[in-house]
Image (cartoon, rainbow, N blue to C red; front, top):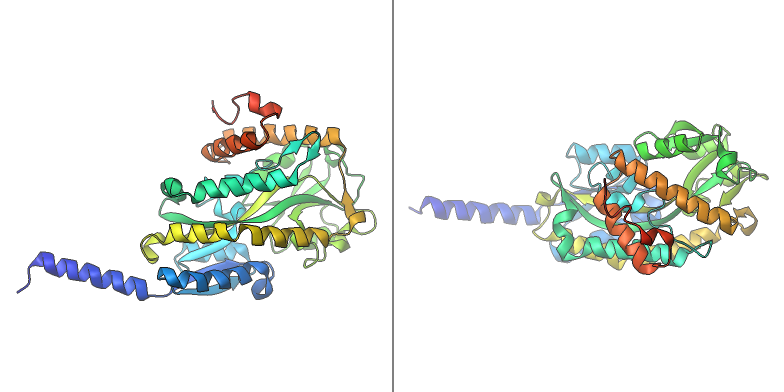
Length: 346
């Protein structure tokens, strides 16, 4: 009779083979459902990952909360969602989506090219094999990061052109992202509870004065209704949003997470092209350009808020340290690079 060791080895091999051949369910959040860019990207991903031994079956969700809950309860082996939601599972990788963390202001102007480069280099850092252990947290693994673009303030009145003017105004805030409420409180505005299923409706029907969103939702969510003839989109990126993939690594072939992260990094330029097209969909007369002095001032305000929010435990300090080093490698002349804030935490 075979020894117990041989039986155990055979059972392990059989288990591994069964796992490799079993399909993995991936819950994909896309606010536009099966017709959205996020779901289209997920379909390409599922095909590409076949060569790495995965057999991914996709389920699309228009309610992000439900997608994450199904992932949390084990109904999905993987999930694609915004980092504002995935932060609870993987706070380090979600640092990209901290207020102002990837926004670069140089010579008084928003430098979008450099801001996108900050995002790209951060994703490259998180994708490197040396960072693999950092991408695993409490049994969950970050399997990829994709940019969603800058989140801008959408205003129902362009007179709300300064932080001071926003005091007392109603701003939509997602309950699950406590950092939003903290920032709104700092500027003296009123946070109004919302989520991805209703924030646009609240803006369009006048229930809130301001929302913060990427340009890619301007047309599909018909935000022109909320902007009307008096409103605007302020060209001040509050957050560089990202779309993040999480998996339960034991449900996928060995080494899948690293291959998956590398795949999504290869899609970075494609994502930026989609973002840039979406920004062109916003009419030129709707954009509100900020004076140079205001851009510099708001950048400083966001930095102070980011540090304070991180000290409250709402942002991952390790991630912010990595991103600051990247910012300062690209824009070393900026005043923040002369101090140790976000590098040394007290």
